[in-house]
Length: 399
Image (cartoon, rainbow, N blue to C red; front, top):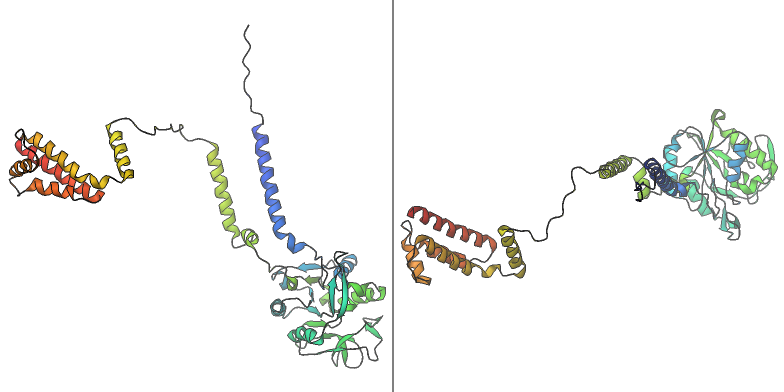
């Protein structure tokens, strides 16, 4: 009794295999994009006066406070975002890039912008990620260096007779070591001819000299939190949207190879390479024509024998020594074809062959000597062709 043959089946369905490969490629592309842009969206872990920092000098609390009250502020992560007509809040850090600040001023020359000056020198608390510890107030020279890039003014320090500030009708206690600038028409006054919030002449720029009114440390006071909303509303053009700047803190300026591959103008090149790879993959799925049979390492036939011998001689470096031997073989062959007398050899045979040539003197001898003196393949080929042509011509004359 014979056992019926079992038809072999593929372990996976082709459609399942295709969707599995597609899902893997899609996941790989997603992982590549997320890992490329993750640093731009990651919240800083060492604090600092940035809109994403939860430290005391940060402004993440103000961002969340505006979002809870309905403003939903956005983030400017590149220069194209800076062209938005929304009120831009630029929080300056002592470690910011001065050139980036100059670029912001250039792009926002006709757009409402609030610049918040730095105040405190801090250090991160390694026990709590995102927290920081206040060390001391920044030197006036550091703050004035940033202030001088925006307006022609100098910072002043001290409450003097000012104990409270009036912010859009809200009375709040003045921060410690209050920072102010001289201004005869302040938007928020800190005493006679002193301003905590001032407007730059001939530009829609505003400068908040003391960040403790709107940073995370200041918003822990309910009165300051309410006053912060009033301060923002005071500057919003027609109650428009609010946007925080991240370009001053490095966003949009850290280019690498991965970003160049997925952003214009090199995005077109990336698509071209991917499409070419996909076409090559599809081309390799099927065979065009029969499979090519594997050829022998050493072929049959006289020509193959000659080619193999020539290859061995070339590898052995003995080709330069073949000129005299080839001339001797050509002499014997020419004598046999032309009917030379028996027993003639060497120079005697050369003289007899030369006498067969009526067109030139010592025609065969000259060609034989050229073959013997050949030093490379080109000279040997030319000499061999001349000897062959001489023999063929004398043989045709004899017939």
